[in-house]
Every structure is written in structure tokens, then in C-alpha cells.
Length: 130
View 1 (cartoon, rainbow, N blue to C red):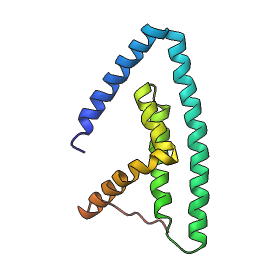
View 2 (view 1 turned 90 degrees about the vertical axis):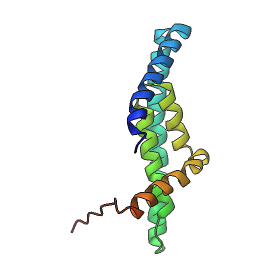
View 3 (view 1 turned 60 degrees about the horizontal axis):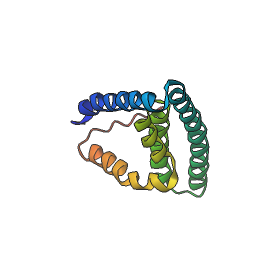
View 4 (view 1 turned 135 degrees about the vertical axis):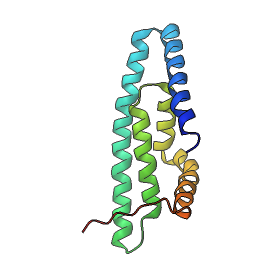
């Protein structure tokens, strides 16, 4: 969390710089078209991966086991989908990495570590609805 402010400032600056460079190199319209294409592709891929992960989670619960890995996959897919909807090429790369199953596995230990760290510090609130 201590790096969050830095990321909130640095990522938009890097995104704007790359968008300006891209607009200069390939033109404004191709740059805008690439941003729109990656957004549409991101929505399609996030929906597809999300439905598949939900199916796997339901299958795990049907057999009486906790869908822990599927929950982590769902978190990665949600974050990846949000990154793909943001305009910019760096956020698109991060989003695609989080959406594709083979590269998502690289980030799963980081997500699990983050969750475990928050749980160990007592910073996780469980809200139960009846």
C-alpha cells in the first residue's frame, strides 16, 4: 500500500507519454483505434475467462471442495479486465497478462501473498449476509 500513491501518479504519466509517442509515430487515429480494439478484446477475454473460472468454481463446490484457486483466478481476471478498460498500452499489457491463464499463474503467488499478509495483520473484514 505504501507504493500506491507512487503508482497512481507514475502509471498515468507513463501512459500519457507512451500515447503521445504512439500518436507521433503512427498517428492519432491508429492510436485511438488500437485503444478501442484492446478495450473490446479485453471485455471479450475477461467475460470468457470469467465464465470459465465460474464454471470451475461451481464444479469444485459441487464436489465439496473449496474453490480457492478459482477465487484467486477470479480476482486476477477482475483486475485484468479493469486494466484493459483503462486507456493506455501499459495498462493493456498488465491486463492481458492477468487475463491469460498461462501468465496469470505468475501473479497468483503475489495475490495469495497479499491476501495472506492482510489476513495475518487482521485487516480483512468478513461480512456475512443472512
